[in-house]
Image 1 (tube, rainbow, N blue to C red):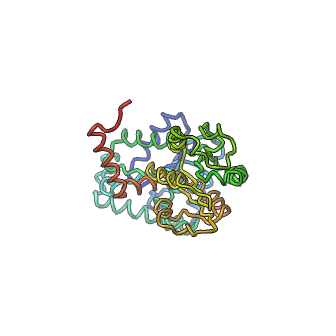
Image 2: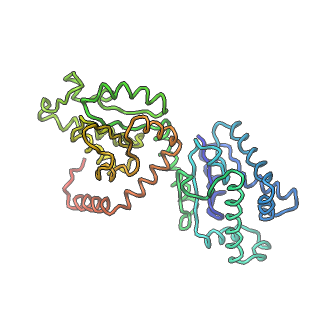
Image 3: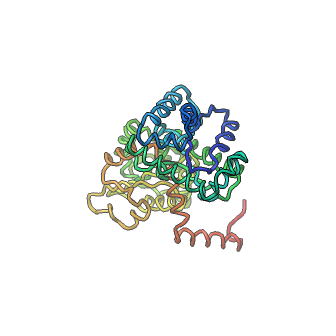
Length: 368
């Protein structure tokens, strides 16, 4: 397991790293600590060392090369550094944020009395701001990175302002468990028309090999009532009669699995109501949804329902989907976290959840 951590000054990275190291028995390394050692050897403060780095990139490159080599030597680790997310893209990338005033107060609180007396809270806030500005400036010059503090660089973003170190640790631990369930390897549910089964099955094996992404296809991987009827290329729900709901319930059970990141939904000329229904279910579960619109008869690429559920993640060809999956494989969990936030903030979702809660309070749901 590879964990990389970054964050704003005073967000609590040091405390979190210590707890994670104890919990998972992993070696931990701080790039910031190494740079402080370099600064001390030259008789400089870290602020002075950062200023020197704006003129001479060796102050950063030296530490960055060391962290890359250290990461190669350790299979599993915790790495704390501004650019660790960049150098170890396959890691779970955690970013801690904090209100500037609270961050400055924490740094003052942790400092020795003599050091605390030398700088006011306002001065500490300004020093932290200059430190971040220097980081952004240096890394843009050296590595052409727009902003090393951009939250889009990270999988998990956690505001620690009003949380205790123990609360932060427990939340991060839950995210790590979730990440390991869904990203080792990344796994998607495949929703497609029954009549397209043979063509899609032939593509599926190659897709998994080319992208490194596993697919769960209920038409031949899962045990369903439909398999008992043979001839998987045709819809057979009319033959199932009163058992037909069990067929769809089995699909929903697969979609809701903890190891499923989301779904790949294929809409071609054979699609039936089941496919968009699965798409809607994925949205309710805050899953990633990538839609392939392969219909030759109708243009579903900009269909409002498709765009509602998939946003910009709509593809007109299998090749474009594959290229996207390969390019973004290390960002799936980041995108999942983003979708989770967007879904739960959506007024439609909130209304649905209120209705569900109301029905629960009225006792309309059966209890197990």
